[in-house]
Image (tube, rainbow, N blue to C red; front, side):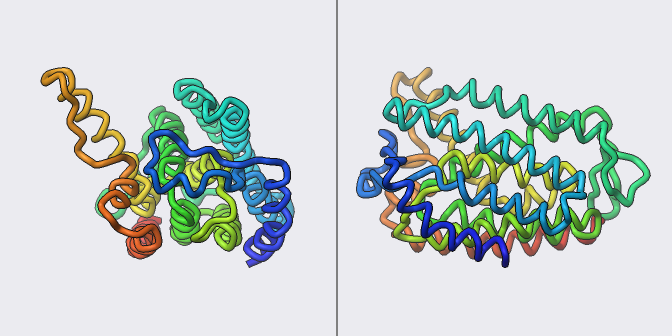
Amino acid sequence: MISAVVVSCIGYICVPLFRILKLRSIRRNEAPIQRSSKKGTPTMGGLYFVPIGALVAEVIVGFSSAEISGAVAATLAFAAIGLVDDFLSLKNKNSGLSGWMRILLEVAVGTWFSCWLYTTNVSSPYSMKMVVPLPAPLGLVCLGKFYPLLTSFCFVSMANGINLTDGLDGLAGGIAALTFIGMSIAVLPICSDVAIFGASMAGACVGFLLHNRYKASIFMGDTGALALGAALAAMASCTGMFFPLFISSGIFVLEVLSVIIQVCIFRTTKYFQKTGFRFFRMAPFHHHLELCGIKEPKIVAAAYIVTGVLILCGAYVGLISA
């Protein structure tokens, strides 16, 4: 609640300020023509709501939690990557960091977090690290040296999943808020501090939605999208709750899969038939639905409903696994 109120109030200052500073979005060439009406909307909203969510969590626990400190560091590191990407996009007319450079930086931060997690004493009810709690009869699965690989993969996939989803007003922010709530419930029996961090970030997303809802006054940009993905990945990595995260973030997974399917089918058919076939009208999937004639608010509302069901499933799986 604190995060939501503070972010919503600060937004009334930052939105006009970002407009004055000309931190305005540029329509992507591959986006539907409907997106042209949103050209010039202030972007990089993650610059103000992500630090507030992280700071509130730190203040609540009195800056005494190693788990929250690590999660905040990773979140802000990904926010910095997104900030550089956004800044270069504004400066170079939609040409930011190259895809490989961004992934390389994300992997570097994910690897650092894995090493930090391995060498730091974190709160856990288990007598050993690097375990993933799963529902019975599987129980605790020890991944050992594969745990850092899973952690790095989770950071990169979640960050880019939210980034791909951030294409409609309120879509990524609302789904992220719900996912943080589901993850906060799932990790509560293992580490209450991480649950506080998730709740604070959920509140920050809710406060941001006041200005990002249809029709949006500001976008979160890569600064916000990458940071939110890192925050969710950090929650899962600190507690081993990767399976509940995978369930709760089903919409993000769908968006990523739609892009992978589109690219693979197009390149394969172009290689064999000289003419590429597009499985979807446009990827990610929310753009396909737009081009099918479904209105933007209806797509967002449907995504919220689906995510609401998914987080209940994810939270339940997390609780019975713990």
